[in-house]
Image (cartoon, rainbow, N blue to C red):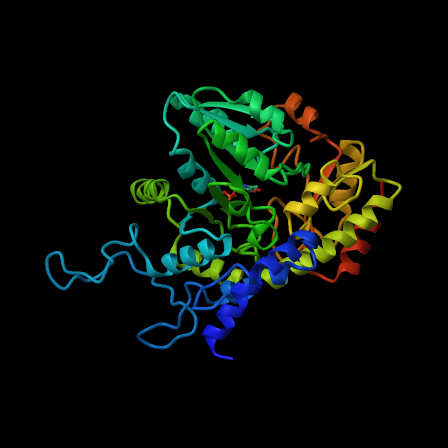
Amino acid sequence: MTRSDTRATMRRFTPVFVQLASQFPNCATGAFYYSRFCIYDWPMGFATTAIHSGQDPDQSTGAVTVPIYQTSTYAQDGLGKHKGYEYARTQNPTRSALEQNLAALEGARFGYAFASGMAAIDATLRLVKAGEHVVVSDNTYGGTFRLFTKVLANYNLEFDFVDTSEGLNVEAAIKPNTKMVFVETPTNPVMIVTDLREVAEIAHRAGARVVCDNTFMSPYLQRPLEFGVDIVVHSTTKYLNGHSDGIGGAVLLNNEEDAAWIGFIQNSAGAILSPFDSWLVMRGTKTLALRMEQHDKSGRAVAAFLEEHPKIRKIYYPGSASHPQHALAKRQQHGFGGMVAFDVGSLEAARVVLESVKLCTLAESLGGVETLISHPATMTHASVDIEKRARLGITDGLVRVSVGLEDTDDIIADLDQALNNI
Ligand SMILES: Cc1ncc(COP(=O)(O)O)c(C=O)c1O
């Protein structure tokens, strides 16, 4: 079969794959992605895209891995004559390769890589002007809440935080000056799921853009642009890098005008991702499909174990049948990922667990190969007011686990011995 025969066959069967994927989101992931990606002249699967998009062998040497262009500037042939690269804040080939790679994975036309997830979110908020209003998921990452309420609010940007898992709340919060709805799904750390299609429809009726922080899922498990979301942001620090060895962020989008402004901000404010960190994230995305499969598999096993454990009062995991948005998570995501949170009832009990784990590492962050365990109330969400934390369920007894890639039985054995110390 020639490539064009393959392409024609794939086109014919695309609706079947899409239909299958919507019926069986977890087992039809491969078919779904197979029907979506097309980086050469025939459709590619997710893993192929991750390994090849933006990453052709180096033209001058044939190096199969994109080189780290560790340079601040580029020699020019004459006045106004250059090879498309003038100064490394503006363009860097390693960063461009990553940006192309991440855009392909999210199904976006444009990608921009930033020095951190927060820098990516900050740049995205530059699409909103003084006097305009943003509706935000009320259980968003603490750093996002801090940026919006303690920094951007000083520049006359208006924010309202609502439970975006209820479309009615989003609708009620919309004002004549609302220009953006910013959602995180599932939220950090209590795993509330928002219906992206519903929120996109509400926001678009009001003429507002929708931004989704897709850090917790990664594009392997959730692709917000397919539900009508306009802009995806990531902390690449987490699953996209996946090895806990670099801080970074990304903005992925389709609208040309908004993309031009994000690119302008990236160059003007200069919070760019370095060539080495760009290379590390590209190294990470090459194994994203495999890693996410295993995070998801171990996440399910750890959640099932925790759900039955007598020392646990409550578990927060969208894969659990008892989760209020379990059906939505099954429909919208291609798995549940490796994030699980649970409540052991008090700060003392949480301290016992956090200080008696042996394999799990007590640390902020998530999405790396190693299992990390943390205490949101005093770590990631310390900047959220105490009353708001209580309302959201971020109690002193809440513990969050980022299930890593160690043997599943070892992770469970460690959590078991720590919990039995309570
Ligand atoms: C969901 C989410 N978004 C954004 C960020 C911020 O990313 P970074 O630490 O790379 O600035 C984090 C960090 O933990 C996060 O969990």
